[in-house]
Length: 473
Image (tube, rainbow, N blue to C red):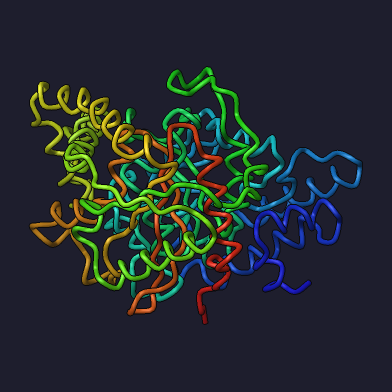
């Protein structure tokens, strides 16, 4: 199979080809490295890449398979991840000057679990500085460019992860999501982006931003790929006391269920307030597909409390982020980019009672969502990124004094589900008038990722929504 053919496989198909010995791990890895060499610099998505080490790992995977040892369902498949997942002995700069040269002594649990499943970790990917931004801009390492049109943003903060997976440089990538940072770039780049329930996936040895809001999840080119990666990384980790001991279900078994009889809530208030008409048309068209497949659409008014979630989520990020960064803010303030500094400094000023009130209200908002939505429906359907994907220069919020208002708008549809910890998935919904992708979001009950995956897979089968490939030259 040719390099474009190999690199164009889904993660699931690449894993199956290697397992069946229809392709070797070396061949698949060489295909990815060729694309990294061809497109990585132009997209500015690479933070670190060692081709020799990647090929050595691929050869080792092939040798194990030849000896009858298959580590797991991802054996020999090259992945690449946001530069905030620590691996012992390897730099993790987190998109910053401050952590340039930082070499951790331990490896993130999620990377250990992907290693155990047989995956290769071949590259570190650029990201928004310290994961603090929804657009993908980064004054330190530069903005990552969208494979669909390099003049446009990828969304953030998992910007390199989205660009690399969409451009067929890697078969999947981990991202983090504290205020939409998996789902927003997935929507902007035409990918599946899954934010699991808070506690479903360990955050041990991952760069922290906001310890009560951080989530870890995959960006992939198909729903089956997202299920495969989630299966590998989910589950209790004693090194992360917030991780859940709930049993991990078989996510891949949920993919064939269909949506007939499934109740999908359609919000009549709040979620469409800032949404561009072009985005709204694409998102609402996806509802017609679900209805044709037998789902029941349930129009609902959102509880009034949902309007607080966006702002309160940002307040918590600011306070908890400032707590983690306090020493650097005193000693190395000039080493931060302007956008990052502008979002961290207010966290030093919020009174304790505001932070505590924001924390206490989380249970109230979650209870109202359960009562208003999930007592009457199985899933909630919303937009993701509310605007047509803008150009990088036009949306450079670091030079705009009103950038906090713009950032609040970009996260309008996604932050409520970091605040409540509910699982959510971004699914491609075609392209808007400017030719860039957009997506819709499905939100489920706590720990009900199987229903999210089931509905998203049914939509993907019907529409082929993940099939289009960016027109790279």
